Length: 325
Image (cartoon, rainbow, N blue to C red; front, side):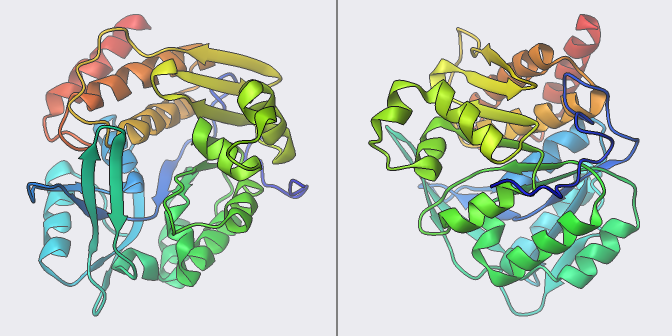
């Protein structure tokens, strides 16, 4: 049952792409920052929240990143990258003993497989310091994923920040075995206004994977899920089939561009989320947001890794949005 005391920010539709934008402020992005390490040992800076923040910075939205890194070489690389990209790292904590996050990525025929190392620095974000950092800036939105909730400290910082930020909460569901449980994820959804997940994750959260009631009518299952958690917006991605958005009693669907040159799909969902946030804060119509998010996610599929160091990608994207009006 949804939480009847769920904070709405500026009204039930505040910040939704089909409604008015929220009060002026910055997106607060909380969660893991880590390095994806590929089979050839190439390291790519990532972590879903960090990927989203990286894109938002390039879009000119000045995100506040709440995370924790190790006092090590990889942590120093993250600091250097953030400084080079012009990102605010005032809410980045440094852990004296835990290592900076690391994930081993295997790019298989069925999509990427992730080996997520346990007990990393981002699992130990200090909630007191995080709340103090967030209170120092005006907040327009709070974004987080589900991996952070694998640790007690992570669950605590999410509770504290959701209670602190008087703005809509966007949860990006990312179920990585064995680092999740349904009870925790569903309770996080009860505290959110917007959520994104894929069709497989929907099935894992609402019933057995082979439940015919889900497979036969996934649209109805997603709509029931959105009502159950009192979500203003539910975004369900369906791979090559595109995306379905449930909002204000309506279903809005979109398909990715027909011609996509795929290098890898790591970070495509994060790219979608970043544009979704840009649309929410910009007050774009939902259909416009869906089309732009799918297009940008397709561009990221043409990259190795989840983000780009080349600002031309972002400049060209922003110019295209401006031309569209």
